[in-house]
Length: 354
Ligand code: NAD
Picture 1 (cartoon, protein in one colour):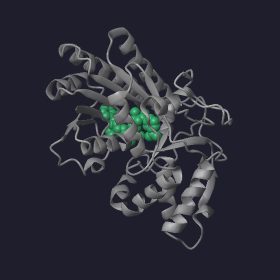
Picture 2: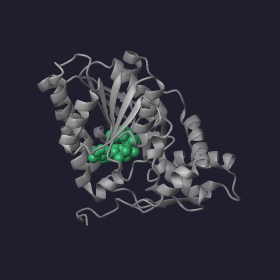
Picture 3: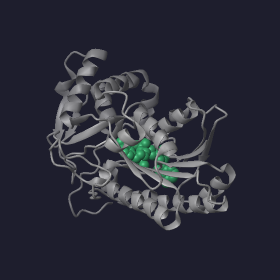
Picture 4: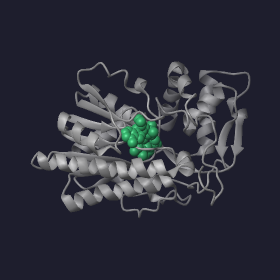
């Protein structure tokens, strides 16, 4: 199949691009190359005759029309987004423009292309979203997010993703556009931009810096290895039922403190230092509106599509730490990008962004 993948130079998008090419799909990677993107993320496939790249912004409708017309994709996998919650607190406008208006542009460009093609049944518009749209769960293992959990987003980021999910569903109901949606838990793994918790902890540990934990570290997340996520996404775009959404989780719930302690003990083994890395743990001011717990009920994707994650969090974190140890040439230059290494998203309630 020919797949138009947006955001394919980012963390998850690049994992999808690499896996899709490895499976013999033709891939068009559409990316604006924001601060979060890196050409190196797709270097392993950029020489393949199955791969092409379009530098374009999803806020630019004319560019999208041109790309649809020239590449004529069978499927669209839409991942391009502003993705960092802390940045959304300081500067929500970019999140509305890219995640909401950009998704609207993608839907309209896809719809007009699909209509011009004679509305093929085989066309797919797959929207990749987050479990954060469902809000925050109590600390009760019996309660998890299902596909029927009402939306209750709390941050500018999750509200923008919830909005885009609603638009995608509306384009299916109103215009019949063949869509599928996925909402997944926190990803981690190779090529994770060094502003997110796991790479920050690994790189600060190696640099002898404090390992910042928001609040008391009691927030619970369900961690999904990025290559497992990419595998699930390719399954859903191929076999998912039209108009349906699928929750994707790692079956790996951990408090942030447990997660960071696990990372420290992996580092103690793979890169021993004079003192245990856990001694660098430091508690810092919590994120405003920090959701207490996210947890995915994966029953639908497991029973309908037969998918389960392939690694435990310990296996995935060990692979990830080793990858960062082996790939300093990838992460070192990214530390110079704007906002990296700086605490973001702590402005007081009511304070306006600069
Ligand atoms: P990322 O920030 O690493 O990558 C986003 C990519 O989108 C970048 O390459 C960037 O250049 C591109 N992009 C941003 N704005 C653009 C625009 N206006 N036009 C074109 N390209 C643009 O993000 P990620 O972590 O890989 O997340 C990818 C998708 O998965 C997002 O939609 C996100 O909401 C979703 N998601 C992420 C997670 C997670 O844990 N990271 C979990 C669930 C869902």
